[in-house]
Structures are given as C-alpha cells and as structure tokens.
Length: 213
Ligand SMILES: Cc1cc2nc3c(=O)[nH]c(=O)nc-3n(C[C@H](O)[C@H](O)[C@H](O)COP(=O)(O)O)c2cc1C
Image (cartoon, rainbow, N blue to C red; front, side, top):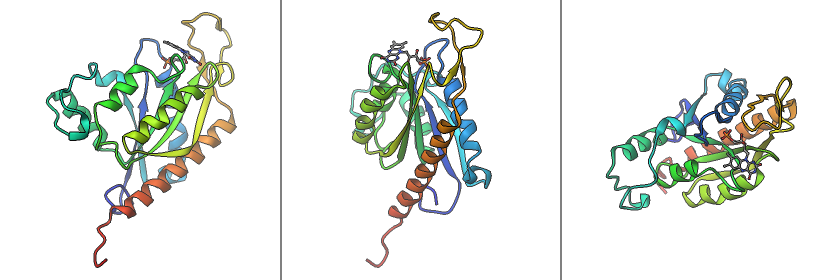
C-alpha cells in the first residue's frame, strides 16, 4: 500500500543533502540507491527509489513571506519544490555533517515546505569524518517538527572507515576517495529500508477513511 492507502507502487526519494562542487553526496546516495535496488520489495517491483538532489533544485535562501505551514506559496520555485516532494511516499535523507549539524541547503529545503513532508516516514543516513552522528541528532527533531515519522534506526558512514583512499592522499581536502562500505553497512541500509516500507504501509492504512465508525 502506498501513501494514498491504495495498493500500488511506493515511491521513495533519496534526498542528497549537500550541494557544494566536488561533494561526496551523490556518490553516497548512489551507493544507497544501489543497495535499495537489491531489496526484495524493489526486485518485486513494489517500490521505486529516486535521487532528489538539492543542488539541482537551486532553491534560494527561504524567501516566502508566509510560513510554509499555511501552504500559501508565492514563488514558482516553491511550487516546483512542493510538487517534487509531494510525489513521494517516504524519504531517506542522505546528509553529511557540517560543523556538528546539517548543511544549510538541507535545512533550507525542509523549511520551504510543510504539508508535503507531514506524515511521511523518514530514514536518515549521515556521513562525515566520524560518521556524522551530530548531524543526525539535529536532523531528527527538524524532521519531527514538520510531522515526519522518523525511523529509530540511523546509518552512519565514516570517511576513514567506509571510503577507500588507495592511490589518494587522505590529508588532501580535495581528494574524493571512493565509497566502499562494508557488508555490515549494506545490511543496515536493507534493515532501514525494510522499516521504511513497513512505516509507509502502516501510514497508508491510517489514511483510509474510517467508514462506518
Ligand atoms: C563546511 C564543512 C563543515 C564540516 N564539518 C564537519 C563536522 O563537523 N564533522 C565531520 O565529521 N565532518 C565535517 N566536515 C567534513 C564532511 O563531512 C565531509 O567533507 C563530507 O564529504 C561533506 O559532504 P559533501 O562532500 O557531500 O559536501 C565538514 C565539511 C565541510 C565542507
């Protein structure tokens, strides 16, 4: 069941939460997409997973005069972003840790909308020098504030443990490394994705009209 409460394809968006040139975000999100494509539900054609890259959205710093909770969008870029987010049943937020928190581009993109996030399950995957746990600690209450059902599990990837630096100088800040997490991380993604789909199906049941009650 998808978010409309009807049997059908579940659409999951993988939010790429960074936007700088030479970022690692697309490689990390691409790795997550490959893992989720191997999930039995994806193989059975019950779910699709798509990257939602914030760099491509090119949102300005929040410029709406009315808070998103009122849904009174004045700008075309907000309406376009609203249409993108509204199309998904659930999200996995793939984000680095920037200065102990989430990148500004991600917080800004969340702040632009409200109803489009509400009630949807959210998984969190962070990456950073030590796995990005502090970004996750900040992101969880932000997602809860816009009414998302944040999963209890969270996956972390460490730049020095889940990337392969062979042939590159790890101390060079522009060296990109190659994402190469171990099997345990792949298993964590699968488990989180299973939880996410279960939450979508439960949320779908909740929105079925309570006829005769
Ligand atoms: C502005 C900035 C702040 C950062 N702060 C942290 C931090 O607080 N903790 C951490 O583990 N890594 C930090 N890093 C390292 C990033 O997690 C790492 O560079 C990661 O690849 C950034 O994601 P991106 O490549 O998708 O932009 C920071 C990087 C940047 C650019």
